Amino acid sequence: MSIFSDAIDFLASIMQVFLSFCYGITVHLGTPSYGIAIILMTVLIKVALLPLAIKQIRSMKGMQELQPRIQELQKKYKGDPQRMQQEMAKMYQELGVNPLSGCLPMLIQMPFLISIFYALREYSYDPEHMSFLWLPSLGAADPLYILPVLSALSTFIMQKQTMSTSSASGAAAQQQKVMLVFMPLFIGYISLQFPSGLVIYWVVSNLFQMIQQFIMFRAEPKGVKS
Image (tube, rainbow, N blue to C red):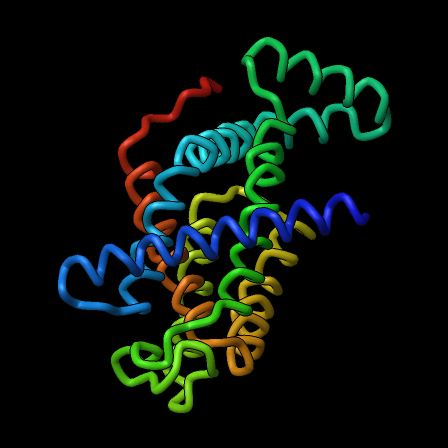
């Protein structure tokens, strides 16, 4: 556990240096702004992680397209779980789909997401440029509660977008509906206490991912034949 925390601290320090670099760009352009620097940093990080995100979305789409065939196997071998698992493994192998491939990109991204959280939460802003738009300080919570609302709304839309492509049914579909309500409310609630800079990162990250998923879900043809 100590190794993991040390790694997170190391990554967080790198993220803080990166934020300072982005802030330096705004200074060079004549508009010093930590708010713009956070937006710029968020976009650059999302672009850097884009190959992993694309792999994750493609894996998710592949599994969604296989749902009808999976449900057929579940009905056909309802009384024989072992045979059902064998047939599903055979189907995955024939179609070249790995049901676990979507988890790896997410696991790789997690340390970066956690380090960004700590980097922004503990960042030392220059007092002269801590304000941004209606926010008196990026190191403090939004006094007008606009960012918490945006964080909850963007989380809801992103989850709704993902659910619209899902063919889950039964208990899985019900669980998705619960999370569709719970997760945005939870994110909005904790955003009431988080520094505004961190919530800006979350909102911009959600917007980037929504655009990314919209393009991929609309542009890519289905790759699995039924």
